[in-house]
Length: 131
Image (cartoon, rainbow, N blue to C red):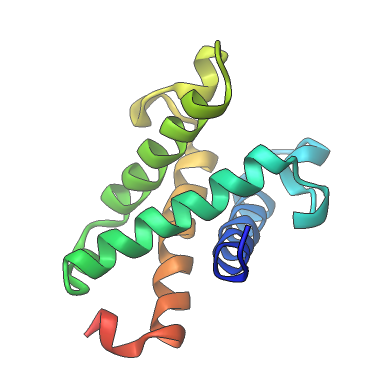
């Protein structure tokens, strides 16, 4: 993974951990809050890929994606992540590929936070992209 992908993956992972820490009811599984270095390779690749998909989506809309509702932003992240699950796991558990309306509230809030964290990261990296 090149350094740009690592950067994006780390932004995604940090936003995931922040969301889980804030919204997960009770004590999350250790794997939910494991640092980047302890995250399985397929999850690191997937995090970097989804970061790239969100960044591309923002770019091709000339930043207009920032006007989407929080729920729509979260749905976009969830759909991109589900595709990565199918890419890396032959027969995923139904909960891994559940549609938005079946995700627990903590996961929906976390996915919204991931999109917004990517927006903030891009604003720092490429201020003109978010116009």
